[in-house]
Image (cartoon, rainbow, N blue to C red; front, side, top):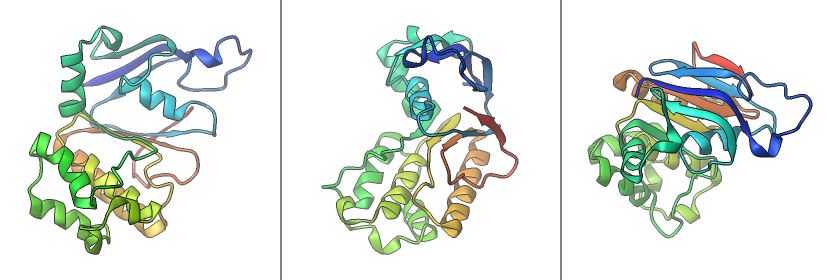
Length: 214
């Protein structure tokens, strides 16, 4: 997948509004593999909706979203499975960890499907993230910031053309923001992947990112 395009796209809930001040909604936008994008948004402008649309979770929008020119609403279930397994690595805002599983078990759920990283590589990510001592802790017992770091590790455990992250550092301090940005950038560079990160406040510190106001 080389390009994600949005053409005159708009959440249906915004239909009929007189003034929509956005560089994405009702515009033609192309997000290219290998490039970095920071989508800056105010609360309620549809950033999580945008991610859900691109990932195929929701279809309550007008206009078109396409992968390499193919309308995503025409994709089959098998094609969507391939997109989510090999082309778009997605971190949702709510993280979607299983509280009854350990931090490592949550990560391994994805890595068993992709075989993208070795256990030692995953353990190294836990160490870099400062949560090596939480590998065997239940996700439900972790702080929100620790859960966010576990979810980021899980996101990096797959091949992809785009890494899409919805508020990935909302619960992290400046130092952990920098660490996460470095890891995401390194993984994207290894795979030649694009980065699409949304934020309402605490921005992911990615150098050279194109800022798009939602």
